[in-house]
Length: 300
Image 1: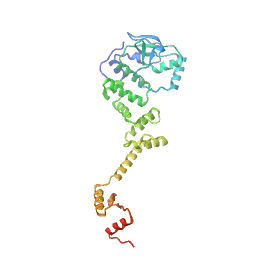
Image 2: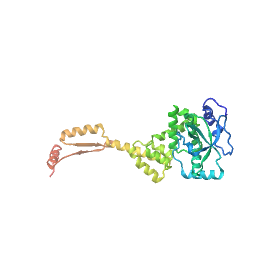
Image 3: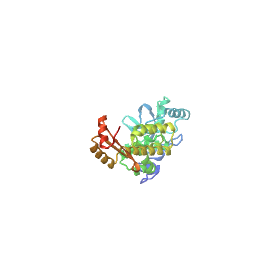
Image 4: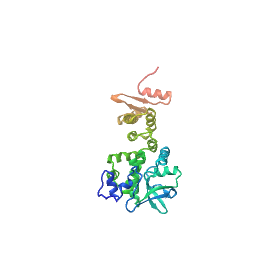
């Protein structure tokens, strides 16, 4: 059994040690022979008795990639057993779901597996670690996995960073993606938006502008810097509209005074640098004549 270590650190050894997990048993090297640790066994399990990891953070499996892996297994054999735990009369996958799926594609009846005893917390953590090591998660799946682990294990961002060997800022930036609208998250998962582009959209102040901004990004293929500039421009435009729509206290007071004088609706638009305009409503020719008399204006 691998020697256990105390404390948490920014590497895989600290994670495996703190959870009592053998690094060797989880190291996906390409060796033909696998020797189980003390208290573990390697057996051929019927595929029908194996279930997916209930804590699997990955929800999108590329079918072409699975088929390629299946072809590799067909030609070279299963180089690394999957890792499972007993669950009633079944077995749940701890690590190796892609290999499990690829073996099913080959219509095999059994698969070689290491049977391990582990709790839910460790299982959830290891499922995330395996995917992170293999870069199998899309950014949204990774962010959701971080959020789930923090909730399940009552971890802060810093503690989670220690657990998975990441910088805290990496965790924080990933979690920020979950604040994005669903449509943006879907575009990230589809690979149409990068993490950088998506994070830039978090700066957009009005969600009503999102569709137009997304359309421009996708149509023109903007990079992260260009997206940031576009968001800044959209926010500035929104602020300009807000300023234009909100009359100054001076303009509102003047409009009320003029309405009292003329007995009709008056609008005062105060512009910049002292400029502006005054609009006086009238409802008929006789009403217009009345207003002109007040202004002492004679019309032939």
